[in-house]
Length: 115
Image 1 (cartoon, rainbow, N blue to C red):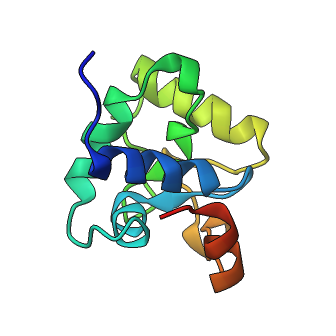
Image 2 (cartoon, rainbow, N blue to C red):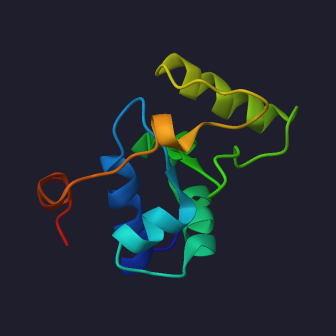
Image 3 (cartoon, rainbow, N blue to C red):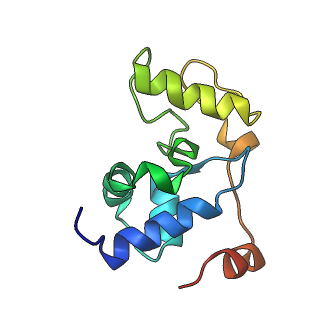
């Protein structure tokens, strides 16, 4: 694999800061990584992450709270399972963002991110 771009690395670092039991949207991750409007790049970057990184990709959802994958697919079931292990309730392939959405404060971001 070629060296990932600086933007991809920033996205990975941002995703790593999302705490267990919380979720974030692709757009929110793009914004927090300093890449507003690049939600699709977040999705692509998650797919590029080496499995050895143990990136919590499953905590990233669509802006509606819907899981990233189509209901009933193996990937959706995997994502649902990982979230449920962390105490996140998934109903009808969706998570209530008001309850489980990650809203980091400034201190959390400054401590968690290095860029």
